Length: 521
Image (cartoon, rainbow, N blue to C red):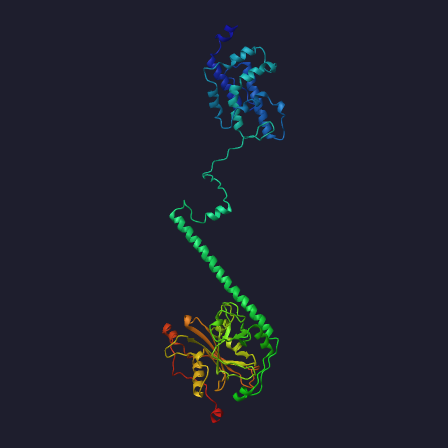
């Protein structure tokens, strides 16, 4: 029987021709429509016809599943031939024709020989499925490539089909940076200082950085300390002002001569008693309504004492207002009589503070055209009397001027003659930034306020000059009139830095002078 199977018989084709026909039949069965009949060019064995029919049936079932994906085929009903090839075939396999030729080389044993050993020719494949199962398993090699082509076609996924494996993440072009370990607070602080392994440039950078931090801290402390000190000083000044203004002022309406003042008995004001309980060097209280100037005035034998002390004698950058030590202002003995006549020109000093405290608000007489019209009066009370002064001039001087424009008004405290007095007040009028309708007469007591000014650098001084309100002179209903001075006389230092400006001594000028009635007297 072995000879019968393997040996060539009459009228039969050679093995190579049979194999080629079988492969061709399988290919036509796969690529043809389900209705298409198998090729008739060459005869084929029964098992080959059955295999082609099964493959056509499987393809038809696949197409029906694609058309109706909701019909789920239970796993046990799937034919063996349809399940086996899917386990070994990835999607990226080559086309069916090429794969089939590679899988079945010529030197392998013919498929029909192995199949004929197990299944006799007279037994149809359909009638004995149990006996043809080995044939299907042995025929899995040529079927594999067929399933690759079918797998490549897009079909909806069902429960019987395995989900495609997830694609591996594509490598990005950037390299992943390693996470640095977080430094502790101590390590971060230590890193701000130069270290042994640092380069020279790195050490310089760290030193400059540390120096900048130190400068910022120091400057911040100085600025905050400066304004905190000013704020505290203003609070204390406001507290004492509230105490002082509890007592209503009483002005003397009697016109007094100098002789009457000498023989007068002075009584200490109730408001002044409260001030003297704080500091016995307080000689008066100054107020310019609508400004921060509402504070006590000190006097001692040294003009420098209250430059850095407040009215309580405490350390303060703002210092205090103080009367020139050479002045006499209601200086009364124990019996209540004047020790000396009051000075003709009272000079009061104060710092020009950035927060407008002390004499810081006086700069607005220079800067704002309408500031004088809003604040034309100064109230400067002694410990015994209430006094009011009208401002008639405000100007800039050079504290170290030795040229022809020298005007040291703080050194003229008394006037021996009428001419000397008018020369003094007319010089102030020539320099005034704004002119006004206030008249000045010989015998009027003058008040001069002096503070620093930056127009001439450290040498600049701003002067505000006023004269005492006369008896029966109405100031409550008085509205001053002022206008710009067209020919201001500045110090020489001012014109040196501004060659385009100059003072004209021949320009029209209306001086202060005695009235005709006063001249006749």
